[in-house]
Length: 112
Image (tube, rainbow, N blue to C red; front, side, top):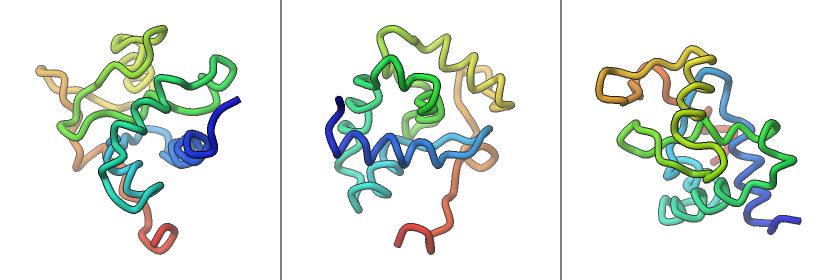
């Protein structure tokens, strides 16, 4: 059983479209109204129950610099990158994702 806060985070992560990424800070802003909960988003994804790993697209959440941050011990950075690339997300030679091209920009009217 997860906490209500983690459940809210998981529900928001499920809204990230296929082939797009969001930052921990964006998910925090959408859930809490500010970016100060970015670490909480990371903790929630790290604590994602095994039976939810395929339903909640944890791999679509990356850091604000556009890089992968390991969120799950059992599904590392290579797995996250593999899943993103399978969705068409591309990385540059330094391992960065282009926010302009792949970043999720939710419709503000849906959240604010």
